[in-house]
Length: 127
Image (cartoon, rainbow, N blue to C red; front, side):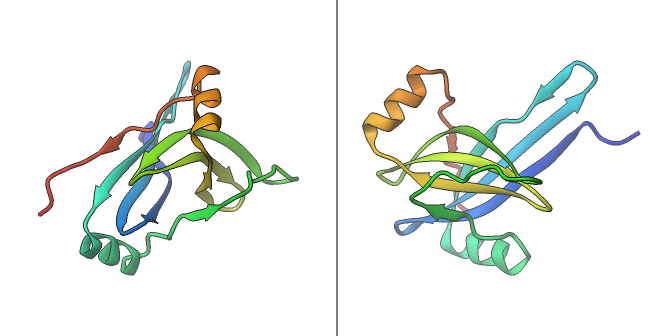
């Protein structure tokens, strides 16, 4: 039987001079579907090594991705990181990628008031 918990979209985002591993944790089984996105602060060296190992860089853009035939787009949350604000989308077609869209405080407040999650940033000790 397949493991019901997997990693979905994941990428490295450089926001200003700081790096974040953006990861979606997917838990799916009968009657359960949980799929939040988290951001983990990394060092520059950790980010470089993860990218060299095959983790993609996150797409950061100014416009919301649009669904098309064969491409699903789901708003996952609002990310506050290094003094910037983004709405984060899970985009699934042949791959599963996170797309960060720059937004302002008013847009973030509107999304949060509508129930959109705030994406947790995990600031772990660097090793």
